Image (tube, rainbow over all chains, first blue to last red):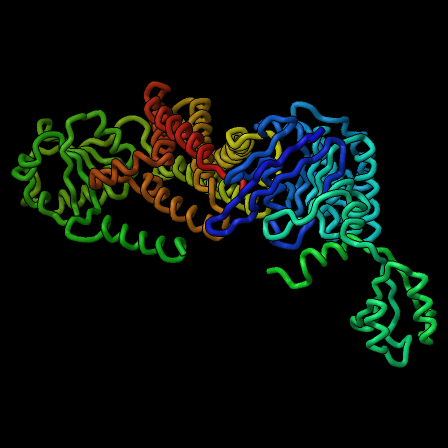
Length: 295
Length: 316
């Protein structure tokens, strides 16, 4: 059952078509990812789903009904870029937002869940980036929403903060909340998302679970070696083993790892620094959207 | 750009229009009766430059204006009397002009001074200063802050909640109102303690005037901040509105005798009504019914601005 259904969504800004007739559904209780390069239309799509921006055409259905004002009581949103009243403390800010909703959760439990205790009485403009993201998440959860929108929630965080944030999201997932996540971190999408869509130029170019997408688009793994592993890389060998040189590494795209390794060994290639890895979402992302810079 | 170019140009041209040319006036005289009769009675005085003679029918209103330094002399032709405000230096100089040439001085014209409590200039100007201080607090303290909130994303975060634009604006008005009225009260109490300010009327009524005035000015600030996303532009617009309002609301000098369109324009400004109502209460002991017109004007302006602000308001 889809908690949100997006049907033929179009959004134009003058002559620019930011969202070009997309359709997809968000199953209830899942963590749903929207991926895409800058300018793909993800943020516009999400803002329409959040009922903040009106579409040019198409609609978003919540439990089968068009979005209405009361959707804001059911949704929690963490924007990528936002600010809070500077001279309120963290606790005062939470109390303020909890009073803006008809229903709100127990603030003490929320504070504990999002680990805000250590800076609860600090003014919001004095907390660190990681602390701010946890506070913004707490604000998004203050009304116990059915749907939680997280727009690039870990951008700018150090690895420890990011991993801690992922644990928070996992705990929210465990409570069967529906989460809609936009992110540029492929490992984040792969680790958290049950379903995702990849957008580019306002259209959906891939959709499904991370595993399904990887199996659909790739059937090989990657073997990599430093260029110094061989005195000379024979063109015939590279072609036979489906290899390419990139920078200081040589990559082999192999459906049969043991055979590839055996072939390299036979050629006298030094295998001490050999690495084998499965294809990732980042590989898929780059394959589908290209490696050119987006402006 | 508005602040840097339009405002100085407006001020220069405005002052040039108001205060230069052959009609420039330094002294104002109310004539109860026919100014033609005054011309016969005191021809030399009548033709002195930079004097304006204003025909007036209501004797009581004329005396009130003399008490409030809005005019410098009142002459009653029928009674052959003239009045000045003994605390007014303009009145003193004008009387000297009147009697400067004994040969042409008006015969049989007797002097009176304004009876009852007289209004010092500081008593006259204080209500305006309080209103001006309130105006800057309301416009910049509220309007500018909303623009900053819009620019840095605070409003966007609120947009994602069930709060409506009307609720947000109303909350801004109520919270700022309490603060601004408290500041105004403290300033008044401090000034009264140091120099003693005339207060003939009710403090409760004065508080009501300034509270309603604050509401109207906060609402005006919110209208100007309804869509602006640039702090620089907001600052320019707020200055463009506040400075002419300060100069045209009768805060520093009376607009008595000005062009009709200037007087009509002044009635559209909230500060005019605050100042006129507050002066009426403080200087004349006016009651609620006497100033009801000003309170209704402030109420109407507040409602219009709140509705307009809610209609135009953008969260981002």
